[in-house]
Structures are given as structure tokens and as C-alpha cells.
Amino acid sequence: MLEIKSKYGDDRRTEIIHDIDDDIAFEDLIEEEDVVVTVTHAGYIKRLPVDTYKNQGRGGRGIMGTSTKEEDFVEHLFISSTHSSVLFFTDLGHVHWLKVYKLPVGSRQAKGKAIVNLLKLKPGESIRAFVPVREFDDQHYLVMCTKKGTVKKTSLESFSRPRNGGIRAITINEGDELIDVALTDGQMNMIIATSNGIAIRFSENDVRPMGRSAAGVRGISLRDGDEVIGMVIAEDDRTILTVTENGYGKRTWISEYRFIRRGGVGVKNIICSGRNGRVVAVRSVTDDDEVMLMSKNGIIIRMPVKHISVIGRVTQGVRMMKLGQGDSLMDAAKIVNE
Image 1 (tube, rainbow, N blue to C red):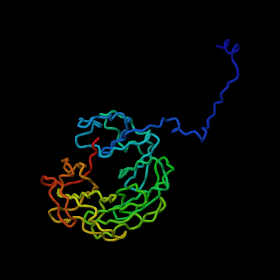
Image 2: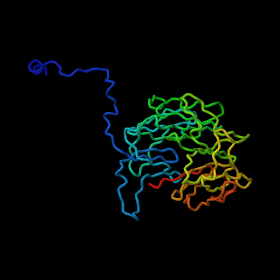
Image 3: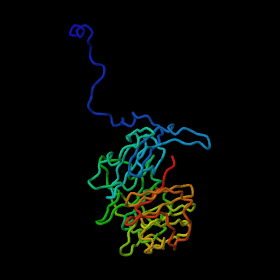
């Protein structure tokens, strides 16, 4: 080796340095392509190539997109770029970033990886909402809602600089927690629903944009013992599905909810009688959707939304799930038909 070195050796032509040029990002080395991202109700996430879902003729049987536990199911499915981001919001008001290319790649049969294992969460902190984002522009907003009725609207552009370990998205007061987050275009209408069967429909324009560290403003005035259980974007061609802890529920056209200024007391959404109990979930649905109902004792039932009656606001609804002794309905979620 020494003989070869003395005969052929010359000065190194490339320079080894320890600093990386700021103009070169690791993302630049990742091929940009569209992928399918699936998220299950239990919080497992994965990405697959778009061509996994091959085209089939009308009447085809379809393919299995995700293998899940019996009590789990795919709740969200969207197409995104490997260079896009997903924002995850926790009950403590923090937001975490994940680039789509960092999501685990899974086969059609794989269930994916638990989201909590991909993020640096505090002990006891849980994910409450996520928003896929292609571009952090100033034309879109994130509208947040807390259990105590606070709402906050912040420009999407304010979340364009990710930090390792996440940042504060909203200041949460003691005894409160973040319930939901929605991506809007600044001109949408929102509905906030409470556990005592009250709902308020208001224009997003009633909420002025605020900075990331702000605590927000009053979205709905709550009576004693009441709390917010959900927020949905109010689209006129959809219905609001409301379900209660004793297994009853109904659908109501969004047009039946009159506009009220932000911070009002709202209107009756469903009668929370002794038969019904308190409201546990609200969802924006259409006739083409399917929902999964889940009880405290682990009983689940799947049903087409079109089989659920569409009736007025001030009603008790119909039986949706027959519960055993001591059991109660815990949640309702839409199912994605892959």
C-alpha cells in the first residue's frame, strides 16, 4: 500500500467539511411523490404508494387496504405528497410536525405504527386532532376549540417553522383541554356542540385571527355542568349526527341551526332526557357515509348513515344501539371506505 501511495498518490480533490450548506435540506434528497396515508381510530398511521389502490371496474370487490384489530378501523384516508406535512394537536394545546416521508411505509395488510411512538409527547398527553398540509400559506386558517367553549383562529402560515418536540398552538387554561382543530379557508361556518344537547352555529368571520400563543375567545357560553364535546364545519349539504350515551341519536339538517353570534348560548341540538343521557359525539355526515358506534364495554356496531332518521333539532332521536346492563355509548366515528 505504501508503494502504491508513493507511486500514484496525489492531493485529495474533494474537501471534507463538517458544516452542511443551509441551502441543502434532507428533504431535497427525498423523491417527491403522492402517497396514500391512512389513520385508524386507535391511532395507527402508515403510508402506501398510490398505485396500491389499483383501478377496478364498476362492481369490483375492492382490496383490503389495512389490517386492523377487530375493534379498530380506518377513520381517515387522504392522498398527500411525501414533501407535505401532518400537524398533530394534543389535548394540552401543543402541535407536532411530521413530514409524510417520515411516516412508516406499510403493506396493504400492515396496521401501521402508533402515532404516539412517532412524536415526543409528555406523559399522559394525547392526540386530539391532525391536519394534513401541503403548503403553509396565509390564505388558510386553523380553528381550534376547547372543552370550556373557547375558540381560536390562527393563520396556517404561523405554523410553517417546525420545532423538534413541538410548540404551543393555543394557551390552555387550567381545567380546560383542546377538543378539536379544523382547517378552513377563512370564510367557513362552524358548529360547536355540548354534552347537554346544545349547539351553536356561527361564522368563522366572527373570530379574528390571533397569534400562536393566544388563549382564544369565547365560542359558546356554557351553562353549569356543560362542556363542549365536538366541533364540525357546517356545510349546508350535510347533516349533523348526534349520539347520546344511552345509545340514542339522530341526524338533523345543518340549515335548521340558525346563525348566532360567537359566544352565544346556542340552541337545542337534542333533548337530553333520562332516556337519552348526555351527548357523547357529533359528526358531519352524508347518506354515503358509514359510522361505527363504540360502547364502554368494547361493543361495536357498524351502520350506514342513510339508515339513521333525519329529524328536527328539538327531538329525542331513535335507538341506534342496544346496550347491556351498565354499558354506555362512548364514541361514534365515520368509517373510510378504502
